[in-house]
Image 1 (cartoon, rainbow, N blue to C red):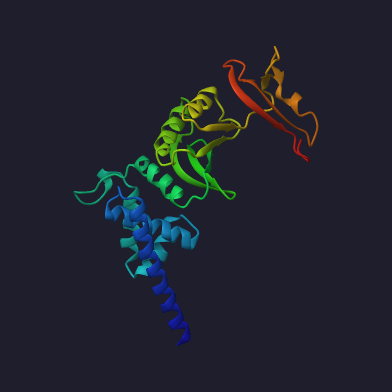
Image 2 (image 1 turned 60 degrees about the horizontal axis):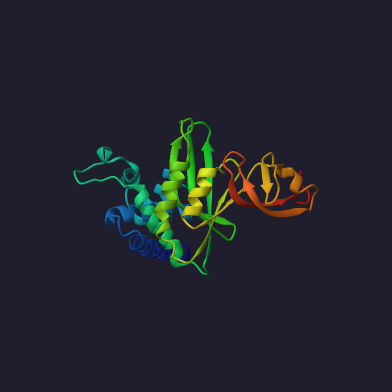
Length: 261
């Protein structure tokens, strides 16, 4: 029957694509064992096809595609995320996620065109349970995560040490001579992070609150940031000193967008 034949062709095509993806993941993440790379490829392939990261949804698709028992596939997917002591078998090991970061960055750079790269730092909170700190490469309106750290939502202590560690891990994967801009949103800017990015010979581009102050070069006093763009459509660029308490040489870009408050 035509319907059955078409289904078989789609299934064969899906298996071929999955096999190729397993090879690709293993090539770009060579530090992973073959079983680790295979299951990671299963996870990512399934999520891309079904457009969901739900375990049951991904498991059902893969079990049907590979014609294996659902419980077998469920356990296989689960164990990738388990700690070593919770996995079956004597030779199971943990996946140290941070070891993947340099390889993920290198994977992106292998396809990169040009010598300018924009990296975005972002913090996403899941209520008060967790906060995900992510480092991503900005590309055509999207952000490709290459490093991340998950912290407890109410944990004490700053995030700078996490940012420093992640930026350092991906640094060696960016070719020398590239211009790297590091973007942060309001709430993530800090003098220490600014200085650290500069010591890496990268360029911090930090969005700050409009209630702050800035001292233009040649001026004796710090002025409110709001005073540099006084009306919609107006923009301002000035060099001087940022962070009144830390006194960091920087350039201020102020812009009041049309239609914004």
